[in-house]
Length: 422
Image (cartoon, rainbow, N blue to C red; front, side, top):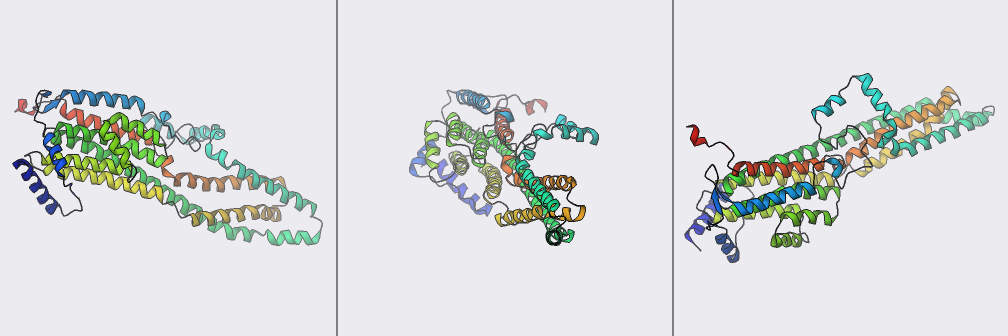
């Protein structure tokens, strides 16, 4: 082992002691030490200096740029190109499944009369309304049956007394209060899950962007190959996480992996899928590559602090998403709410018949009440599964684009030379 390698491993042990964190730096084997020596990248024939004096590997950069362009065509940011787009729950017009723009907010913030008119005009296109329509029809049919039976037994004293006893307004009132409470708590919990998942994905974009800049400014000048390999992994982390949380097939994930990774790297990540998740293996690989790059250089290991901090942020945000994906609102709560809702819908027309009589008003009131309350329950169910509502196509594309922009913006030499201004 060279003197530089020994010094590098010694510095890494000191860093691990100082950080007082649970970061497990990679300890290379003899074979990996040889790889580290190769990654020292002493060959100069393909290297050139950019405007800021940072050496560039033109062939690797051109290949990376071509792969980025191909990936942009394969996975565009357009939500309509999403292969796992939740068409069954997304209505036309403004939607949470798209990242909003100033124009979207302008349309959404129209005055009430225009907003109400637009929503009423598109009522028939509502996916939620279509999903709850069978339940509303069942409740309406039940109210018609109750109304017809009440008319038939209106002059018979015993059935009339039974209907009056079962349909008092106090009976429905006793169920209305807990039903409203259950619906409110359910909606609040679902919205909290949605906000937490959106914040987690925002943090993934932020940390990926920052890590790309760190790779360009600290790792690339030392070891261009290691930096470019890390950028390849980092650019597709959003697409891999999207596939995981949307349940996309294995073929769609391998299509992205095969495009951005070389033969050996691709085969390694495919083999890792048998024991660990793609996302976990990819972040672990970035950590390993950066560690080996620093150990093969005489430069300070301070950049490893920055790399670890960014990787920790991505891992933490991905962990939040995994928790939300694997742990719904307790199903017991959902079952209890469904039973209370069913009892309320059964008793509502009977109560209306005893209070306002067996008229068409009973049927209309039952239908409207069923639409409102069942609709609230269904909206809570849709929001609970947060990853079908998040704009994951655009967020994953944002990770890819930000990683590309940060990396190439730092190494392209297009930035002003600070020495010329002094």
